[in-house]
Length: 153
Image 1 (cartoon, rainbow, N blue to C red):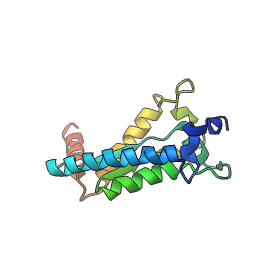
Image 2: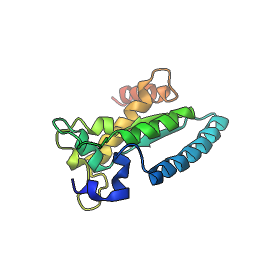
Image 3: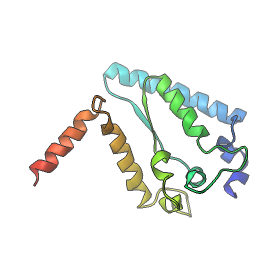
Image 4: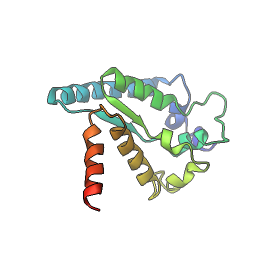
């Protein structure tokens, strides 16, 4: 509840987005378009991973509900749409964190950064998503990892 009082800082949770948040998304769209074009030209995949604020994940946790007018999925949905519009891949790590009944332990209280529990949870989810598609750009990574594990035994 306290985070929601931060005005502009928390307005990404209140769709439709404020003018400032629409401007921020416009800038992100331009940056993403440029990066996607560079990646495509280089023949490499471009993946954007979203790591949510603690407040977003806390409202998504099992048994919790966002207050009226608040949507903790609004920002990742908007970023995912603009990312895929440019042919890039999008990974929303809130999908991994929100299943925990007390996701606050993924974040440090003092500064909101990921903790030693949150960092590997997010990193593992990103790695899993990168290698999940058997025909995707990173499919060989999963096969290589499996091969290395078998060879090291």
